[in-house]
Amino acid sequence: MRKNLFILMTCLVVASLLLSACRTAATTAPETEAPPPPPPPTDTAVPPTEAPTEPPAPTDTPVPVGPPDLSGETITLYHFGDLSGPYAAITAPLIHGAEDAVKAVNEAGGIYGAMLAIQFADDAGNIDEAVAAYDRFTSEDDNPLVMITYGSGEAEALAQRFAEDKIVNVTAGLSSKAFYGAGSGYTFGLGPIYPDQLGLVMQFLVDNWADYKPAEAGDEVKLAHISWPTAFGQGALTTESRAFLADLGVEIVAEETYDVSPTADTTTAILNAQAAGANVIWTNTLAFGPAAVLNGLHALGLRDQFVVAGANWTMDLATYAFLADPAYAVGLIAPTPYLWWTDADNPGVQYAEELFAANERGAGEHNVGYLLLVAGVDLSVKAITHAIDTVGYENLNGEAVQAALIEMSPFEALEGVFRVDYSGGSRSPHTSQIRMIQGGPDAFNILQDWADTPDLRPSE
Image (tube, rainbow, N blue to C red; front, top):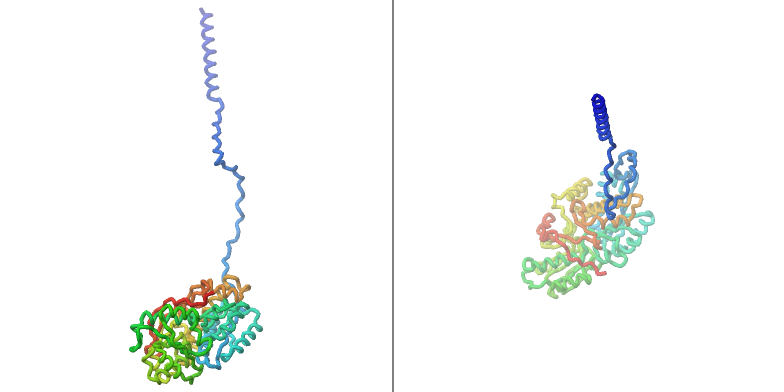
């Protein structure tokens, strides 16, 4: 009995030890790893990750590049025109406007510190003298940028030279031949070409004929072209302008010329126009040119039979100096592609007034020429500055200035004194007002505000 009890207890102890060992083994068994994720689809396989690279070493913050310092440098503008010949009455204020504007630019610091110089040559209205002046300037300067000319004859004669030598010509001579003739491309105008001006005014008269026609005129505009026998005087009549007038229904019934002289007699030209049935006279002249027509009409007692119109230069203070009576100017119509001195709320006009007063210019120079050349210098300075910003001063040349005039377009010179757009192959402005003298020089009143001119540039 005791023996059997001992055997039973021994079995229980052994069983207990075996159960304890099993529990310990279950709790200490190693964990199995989770199965790896399936590989991505082959068409979206992710390339193996590259080992991370070290971040770049810190660098100094870049310093913005400012405008160049051109202190000690000189940029020269050249200009030439008639100061002792027939056009002197209008040229002197042009020259003084340019000189005063350059002086003011220098007083304001120049172009990035570079000072402007300006050199003038009097060509007396002679083409050979103009060519000689050009040759002299180009022989003295191996990198001329801009030359300013004042006459159509000079601009036409030198257009190809300007293009060949890649010198920008900013000109007041608005002949279409100078801008678009063979080999041109560097001549840029301070106003619309004369064919565009003629077309603009004739379009206005056709559209408003009932309001402006002389009392005894019929229903059709009949034009007499009475002007000087010069490149300027004949600049409005081209193949393109003639075709445009024909399409308008405007007949050119007379083409007359008279001398480039303050004492020119226009009697024969006016009587021929009357005999041809003309009711509008266009004159492409300035100063004593339109005055000769107006004086002649009044002397003949025929002023009320004609609308008298002319190029932008006709409506100017210089015309009054040659009129037998200032009242004769009343009724004169002209395209006006720039503001006038009476537009006193314009900052550009105010600036020009300040220069005029500071340089003590005489009252006779308070005219279109002075105002326009202050704006013309502003245009030149803007173009040179843009060229420097684009190619750098070390690469500055006439080609860069020419490109700048095109790239800047359209833009306003001297706070909107005139508006230019040299893009699309155009080298003259294509917008203008039309004004009429309805009193003295302070009454150049707007008949039509800024409008696009016809585009009568020569066809290629």
